[in-house]
Figure 1 (tube, rainbow, N blue to C red):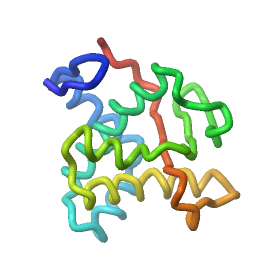
Figure 2: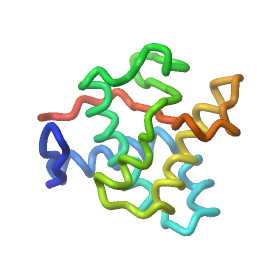
Figure 3: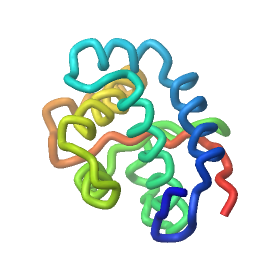
Length: 136
């Protein structure tokens, strides 16, 4: 079980999230994992945890409309004013290296869509929320 602020996520659901993020992020995970000191498996697990935290973010209404860069029925891409990746690291007891690699995966996806690249703006955190219902 994975505990979050709002609910408990079973290992089966976590495994499904791992499959989902691996499928969604695809080659981007491979590219980042090659250059980061974390394995692809670790990176996929951190990306799945980010989806769990993202569900908390969207369900609680903390996601501002102005943060959203792109939204479809499948995904929401945004630049967050909050310290999302720092909060994720602390709440899930992750290393800064793991979070940095996962953040880079999200950053690459958003920069491919958003022509107003925020690459040099480290005050905002990139986040891609994949629309996938999590059973509570």
